[in-house]
Image (cartoon, rainbow, N blue to C red; front, top):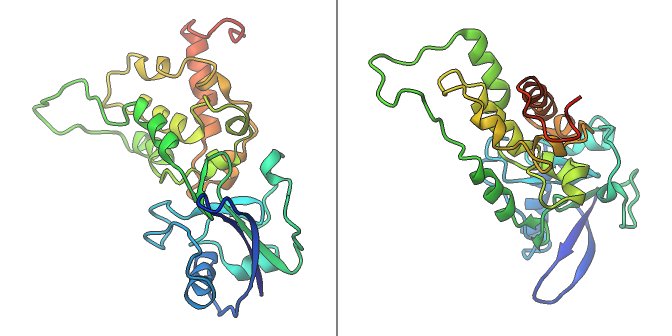
Length: 259
């Protein structure tokens, strides 16, 4: 099996693709293939990983032109065409590599984030934006006399968004993130909405107003790539749509978005 991997070194300034021949075994993931290459062919190949169980979100990368987690993407599924996802087009999906989709698996760094080395991207900007929303619970009562109880329906609603592992695959798939550095992005907005709907918070609309700008809720163009690539099924597009409607109902929509 052939694996075509993007390579980049800041020190040398080299940028291009290397092709490796590997011997896959049943159950081998893309991450497993990268380890195989690193162990047997090129120990300079750089990539991120941690848990290997689709929990940490560290191994997000562009695999066959779709943002995915390398640890949960099976080579067998890729070669069988079982991983095809129909995404709204954006520049990163237009291959610059001499890639034969029938015989090779193409692995590239996650789009819309600066490349540090090979498949390793700089996540600083992503997490800086995440910290701006103050992603911690702000309860109405700091010292409650009893535990804070929630209805099962509310817990279920929250879980849709708490499942986000901050892997940034949604950012890598978002056409808006690709053309606007200032856009907060689907992951951050989904997390913000998660705190807005938490019944333990004040419910004063402050969370909604925190992203009531053209780079926040109103920057989304609803391409829905974010939901399609999310390894945990989080629907940022739905959160953004609901947040917009609430702001309209409150009469707080920015000029031009009132209708």
